[in-house]
Length: 386
Image 1 (cartoon, rainbow, N blue to C red):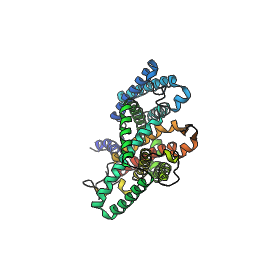
Image 2 (cartoon, helix red, strand yellow):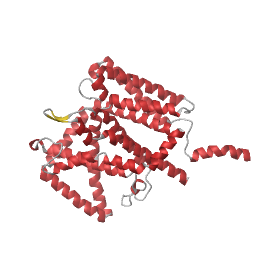
Image 3 (cartoon, rainbow, N blue to C red):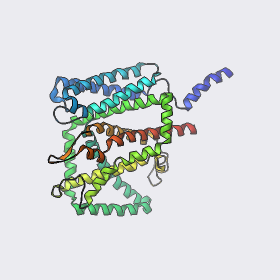
Image 4 (cartoon, rainbow, N blue to C red):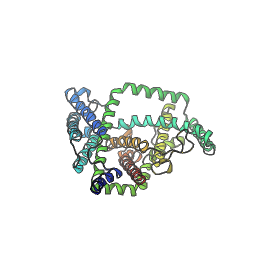
């Protein structure tokens, strides 16, 4: 009996410590396989029919496509997709994942190279519009709920919301402008359905390989030390990540003043443009607030004023999954901004100012590290409570 207990002890310890030495999560590896196959298929299709290549017909542009050209970019996409298929098959078929360092290096290289080769500003543009609209709707619902369930907090927020609406109307936002944005964006989503599908494949593939790289790092002794470092510095990492959207939020908030920053001339600020800019600014503020939830108490337990779920523990996946997706979108959008000028042809905004107002190069990696630190911290707490 003593020998049996001794043999079972390491296995029990492995379970408690959350170690899974056998395989990487099959769902993630399967997702990497499917999306890598799709990337390879896209690259092959673009080589056979160059007119289908969005990086060659002007619809999308990545850092690699600007340097290498559309044909080479299509060839690189084909190679990356095939390499991803091979590595995913190895992960799914292999009995063990002992070579964590090799897997981490390969998966990390695929994630980074996909971002540089196929990352486009269109990714963050569509994501920003969707998130901004969702943030405005969620904000209105939150204020309405707080007025009923926590009026001490809800009434001041209602006053602030009324002031924002009044300021928006004062600078020229109208109901017609809001509807014009809604109709125009819905039409753009329908017209760009194929491009959105390509973007979805790129982001999902990059995210899947990034998650596999993180999982592989967590299995290596050096990786566990790195995760411990992340947990110790998670507050600083989260604050840096939360600061990422603030320059953009400040710029858009200035549209409520007589001196709007990074805006066309006054006569060009149509109601629809004003509504769009202010909505995106609201989304940036919401992104910063939600990021801080990784270190604030409501990142562990839902606030009591929330109906049905108030006071319950926050499942780690509730924060980790959307945070990881957001980090992937930001990282995919970072490299295309390098060297990119925006604005009017006669008065473009320099790449330096673009990357200061939209610091995806900092925001994306910091958010990824903050989410990773939160996930490692939650896993550590779960082990302590087990």
